[in-house]
Image 1 (cartoon, helix red, strand yellow):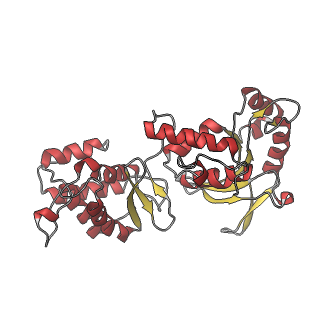
Image 2 (cartoon, helix red, strand yellow; image 1 turned 30 degrees about the horizontal axis):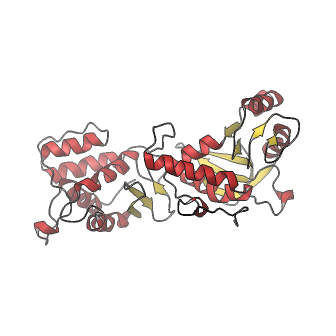
Image 3 (cartoon, helix red, strand yellow; image 1 turned 60 degrees about the vertical axis):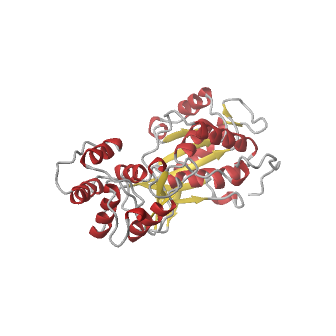
Length: 334
């Protein structure tokens, strides 16, 4: 992503902590950094840049341009390293001449970033993130669902888990899965809906993902609210894999229409998603039923995967999963 030179120079001033022209020192809301602290700043965001003694502002601007030229997933996004730099710049502990909510610093930063279609904001974890103003996608470093969670994240995970216990299948799709896959970089995330079952052809959602090489892969989702097991019959909210097997074959065998290219295309991969557990026996049963070529097209995602990904991507919880809502409706009105 190429930023305008004016934007890069303004960001460099903020990282250096230079007082903006026409303002007093009391109106500078960014911490001043000498040569040593500039090197420390870039080390904190996991880079090896070391200040070489040249003019601080020019050196930082050139470093930012190198960072912005790094490969990243989409032209609509910025590299992970740049997102980390902005988060480090807006550390609440480094509030200068203002309160620790850093409202004035955030205003200055957003005046510069708005030129590039980006907005900075503080999330519930009090960390600064970037949002693409055109797509409303939150720009975050690549999420790691296997990292240790903070206390706040553990609480959010528990609230979401309680919500999944009572959410309908449609609510699981609309309130959890669609925002999640959009945030993970999938495009044209489209729910087939449950009003016209005849048009689903075994899939609840279809979407596409653009690889860095610009090749496009298409995905279909088969979503079940509860646990998936290998029992002979469906019990309660549990679904047996025989149903999933038939729906998966339908999903892989029927074309979908992509309006952006005006063509019908086949699904490359099928996600089988469960709001509960997908047992090992169920996975093995489906794997044995499918031939080798179709087996490689199947991806599984169960409750643990959903919870971990939803938390690390910092998505807002559905309204019914908010901590202040203790009384859940028996059938959420989604």
